Amino acid sequence: MRRADFRGLNLRALWRGLLWGDGGVGDRIVPPTGFTAHLTLFSAGAMAFLAVFALALALATGRLADRWSNQLAQSVTVRVSAPAGEQEARTQSVLQILRTTPGVGQPQLLPDDEVAKLLAPWFGPDMPVDALPVPALIDLPIAGDEFDAEGLRLRLEAEAPGAVLDDHTQWRRPLVSAAKRLRVLGILSLLLIAATSGAMIVLAAKAALAANGQVIRVLRLIGARDLTIATAFVRRFTNRAALGAGAGTVLGMGAVALLPDMQAAGGFLTGLGFQGWDWLLPLLIPVIAAAVGFFATRWAALKMLGSIR
Picture 1 (tube, rainbow, N blue to C red):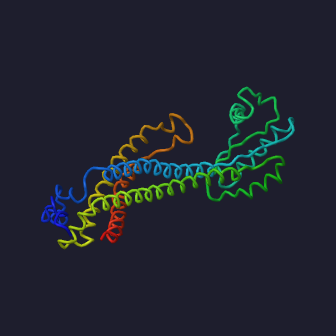
Picture 2: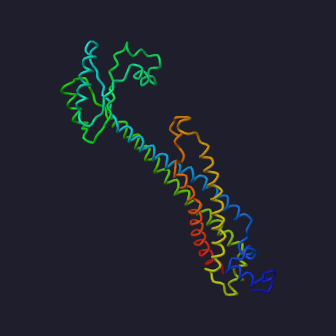
Picture 3: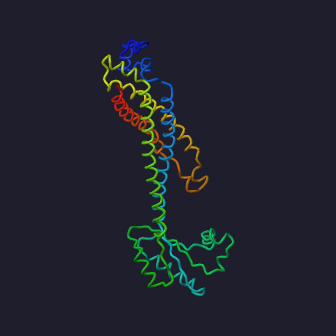
């Protein structure tokens, strides 16, 4: 190697920086600013910000699936249809059957105004329920495990023709299935975010290694092993990934905290957020980002160093 290649390099200081992580000297090996530093910090922060929302989505849809499943499983509905002159007697007969059914609570006949609210999305708010042949609706809460839906359905068919038991199975399953699939998508999004972060860090580490090829050759001449050189890059990029992810996580948690709660808006997406101890889970994102940065940089550094001669 030509003598000019060593000009301006403090070899002893470089070696000490590699072994002990001296801040000022380490900057000569892995520059603290520049394209690679900005790329690592920005990508880690952006991915952490998105990870907070992906985590919130996964948790919210999980709660939504459990809530829908539990609420719909706690009650069933009985529709009673009969000619106008027999509607009242048929309804009372069905109520008597339901009161003697094991595993259920007190059945409640929905008043006309409640039925009108249920039908308002299809027929408008001014529909005259009492003037139309609308079946009577009975809400039947489930109070025990001994409730047999199929047995009650057969009993109603035999003793009260025109009475139909609806346990919400047909439309409960698609809703719960959709919520569970959204939870899976949220988890997959977290994995993709971690993979993307690792790829960006690999590119930044390789760029930094390529830009410092001369320094690496000098360090090899004074006895530094590739693993020792890689350690300097791993330490620097791991810190950058953790710092960027920490900033992105704080911003993401702040954005989630600003979302309207369920009582304020009452829609599907208003449940998106963290509840209780769930607020501690995003704090793991910087730790995971640091781990991703560590392994990604270590792999990239060792691979790149093998190609620098």
